[in-house]
Length: 64
Image (tube, rainbow, N blue to C red; front, side, top):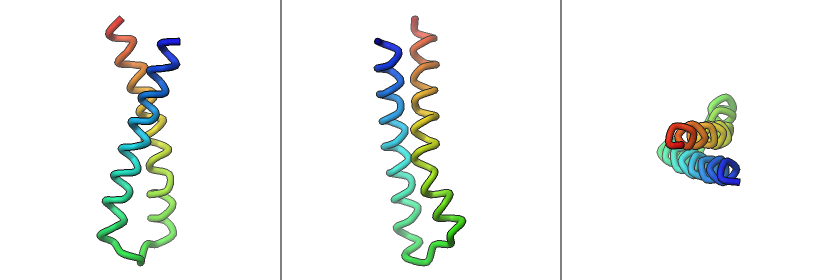
């Protein structure tokens, strides 16, 4: 259960970081965002959520 909890916490931390980074990148750009940039920015939070879960698991494994 601890492993699942660590993965979920890491996932939410990564998702939060992804949303913050995406919002800070989009706000200065205004409304003119190309479709390719929108795709990358849309996938950013999801990728950071997965990386956050993996990082959480790796950190937990080292501490045991």
